[in-house]
Amino acid sequence: MSQSDTNRANRRAAGRLGLVVVAMFGFGFALVPLYNVFCELTGLNGKTGVVEASALDGAVDESRLVTVQFTASVNSRLPWEFAPLKHEIKVHPGKIYEATFVARNMGSVAKVGQAVPSVAPATASKYFDKTECFCFTEQRFEAGEVRELPLRFVVDTDLPAQIRTVTLSYTFFERDAKG
Image (tube, rainbow, N blue to C red; front, side, top):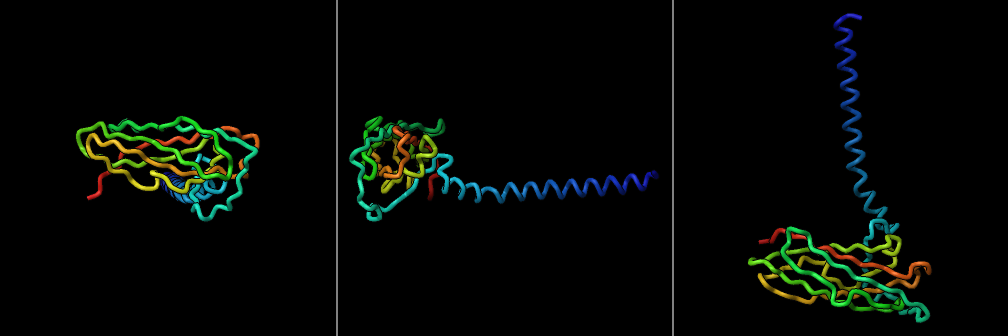
């Protein structure tokens, strides 16, 4: 094989490898919205649902109690304290309940934060809906400000019977203040 044949074969192989890399990147990029849809449909990754209180059918399963646990944390960049007032409550599926969290800006300047929820076990997230939540919007706290943050939620009556405990976790992350 001559030197020019080797160079041509190498260029062709490099071109094919370049196309493979571009195709793999495009495929990975296209998977992001598909992953979000998949998580929404299956409840994977603990994402909770949102429902209007008026859309609920009013059916309550009085024969069943589910324990809902609350946990709260703050990303290390945000100088806040954040905790639930109650760490767990017992609920009847289908009934709307309210829980309250308290946040405090321990810093010397105003900060904006956003709470991100997660539900465990992940399969329960399809059956955990919020009607009102502080996590729907960014929260701006002045230096030293303390505030109660309400959450209204319902556990769907279709929650599988083997799930007796659901844990709702929130993590507050710092957001850039908007001018």
